[in-house]
Picture 1 (cartoon, helix red, strand yellow):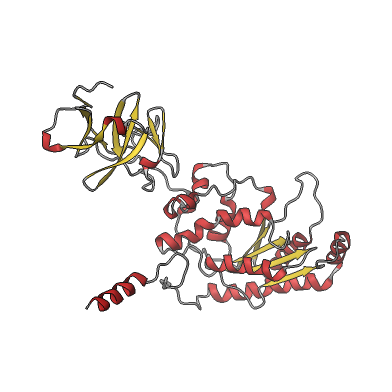
Picture 2 (cartoon, helix red, strand yellow; picture 1 turned 180 degrees about the vertical axis):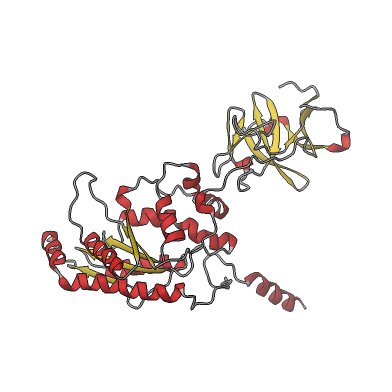
Length: 388
């Protein structure tokens, strides 16, 4: 590397504006790394012996650019993969107006110097909000019932499903009660599994879902639209798979973490006055554990439950005779009556909620997910008393 003084772009600055951030030999070992100039966090890049410095915060939701990777001359944000030119700060082609601040950088006597003030400004290209991002507001009308089937099967070879049978019976019965009713079969939707944005940072798990915003072909937007913006009653049907809900159920609720996460990072409740009920069918046992998972998750996203919020049936551990199980459920008057009664209880409770009998307002966060207790304050008080 040339050790002669060199600076990047623009008129020279006074010596007081340049900050020594380290040795060339050390800083040239990584293509992207974090540095600080005063209290400002920056992303330092090195490509083919040339350094570049841009802001450390992405324009999107503030992702740490210094933890990203270099793709040609662009720094790729590790959260949602937005790209910014490593020396100029402008966005990738087509999105140049989405720019982060850039700082001049120069090398003198084997040291890397960065100008303390950015020579370009942050700018944001206007982006139309995603349709799901609108404020949830219930439109006038009758109670709305959404049935969600989580049963998997071969697309072009349909089979009888006990949970689907009872769920469809319940949804049809809802219409006879004067409710609007519709169904979603997860197996008919093309949607990606959760890709762990929350594992990067709680703030990287966005509403609407990061995948939904980035991939217009992802069809879980239909579930989000249904549960957040449309339905008053959500009925979920699941088979029992090795003592747990179906794999499609888990694929769905892992993606629905973005709904619950709004409580964590923004104290924002997306789902209010929603009723949830469940239909659990299986050739294996463990009904109560399956119900516990369903109740626990839907409670965390803000749902209420009717009296006796689920119906269930199982042949138990010893009966490996699914043909008898399906025959029994198909012909069971009691189970079909139970499904109809479940939706009746759910619709009646939804009517009360829609009428506004529950007081809305800010829910205290103490004791809820990801809310830190005042332990630090308690410890500080104790330490202060002991030191006196």
